[in-house]
Length: 88
Image (tube, rainbow, N blue to C red; front, side, top):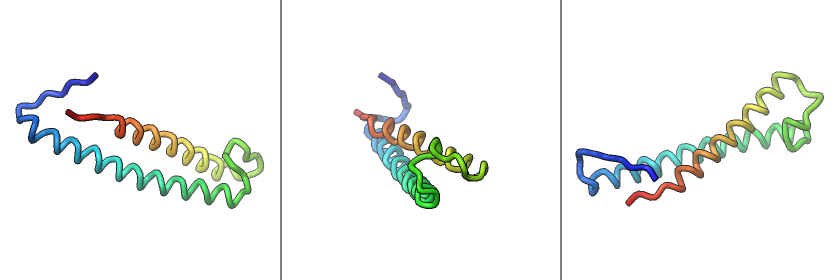
């Protein structure tokens, strides 16, 4: 459990926090879709499902692919965390 305190009343703070969380989920979701599209482009280009299967691609492409996979994981985690928040 997390406790937040504010000098401003709860009735004013909660809607602002809720809106901020919702907006952040939207922004992260946009990034998630873009990352998924980049990963799909790699999969199509190389005919592989993940960078771990890629043995004969350029080191730069492999590094970029791995970075996109890490980004995808972090974005999914952040969205999950934000969606788990209940304000009352």
